[in-house]
Image 1 (spheres, one colour):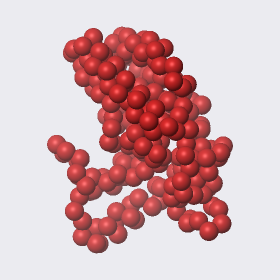
Image 2 (cartoon, helix red, strand yellow):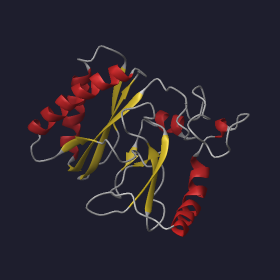
Image 3 (tube, helix red, strand yellow):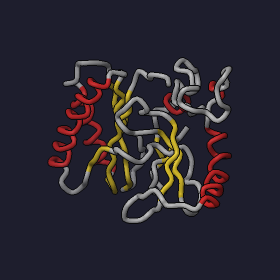
Length: 217
């Protein structure tokens, strides 16, 4: 699989006024000034004057797992400071659900998200699917085989429209697996998402007006 030279770390918060969002962005900018181990950038991804769910992105330019883990610990300390600074809201790092989503949730039951992997590992930033029951907890559903077939049918067209064609290499599958995508691809940069570079050039913007973090690109 391609060893991408970056890690994406996401912060999220529910129902945040624009003036508070601006203060959080300023605090994030000040926070990264203390990090001198590799290049890092931070982005305010939701642009809205309304009270709305929001997210911020930290882009860490490294493929070193040890360095990424060190940054994660430092980021945890920063999050604690943010929550002390703004006690009326809850800022947290997104560690499980794909962020951003690349299109609306697929299917009615189970629902499926197609988005970028957020876990701090070598798969970080790559296009993934996540199917679940939606409720108090996001649980992977138990399915009969016929439901698995329905799930596949629901997902395949959406996945096919999003995946990058750089995977079409000799001796590789036609579906788009992690081992296929090219790290130097001008469209996906190894993520598998054909519009990743386009989204990056657009400033990593996210639409959170529907209560889910949809990429704007």
